[in-house]
Image (cartoon, rainbow, N blue to C red; front, side, top):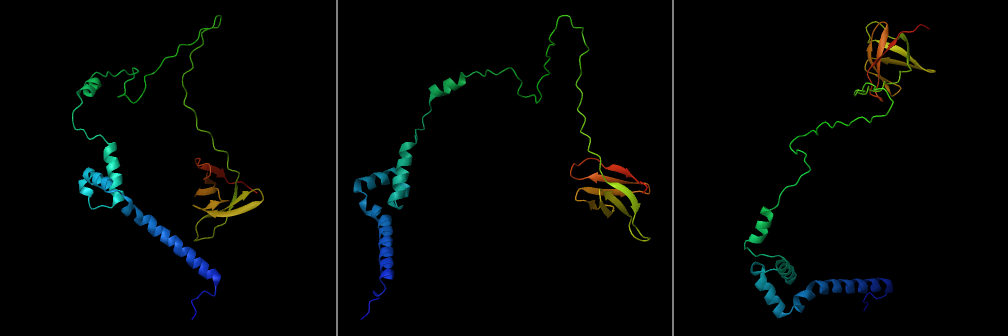
Length: 198
């Protein structure tokens, strides 16, 4: 009669897995049998609603109830201390969204003439760099939408309204003498490029 012990490697693995499974089952069920009756009765007295829960749950619930103070009496001494607290702020009105204007006096330098104060000037937005495209002709036929020739260095592009040239410049409007192009990378305003000869 064969018992399947011919392959020693498979038999060794099967025995090792059986031992691990036995240890896992023992780890789960040993706490049910090792709790003393006195500890179990105190946990049940602390948590009467959890009497049907496993022993682990009653242990955790008992510790939590001991840690919290469930005294419902009113502490008048703490209430009186909180009533005596006065707010001492920095003088700023917390209900106003803007701070008051602070006037900083100018330092007086001896012998220097009084120069007029320089007022605050709003900074101008930076100008977009000029678009390097050259508009030098039309490529449209009768009955088709307008198309133009644009040159950038040695490259020549043919584009219509709404198309993007060189993955950066969008043709906004084509007129007989000029074209409006916008740089979509810099998001600047459209620039007008005149028709050039040759």
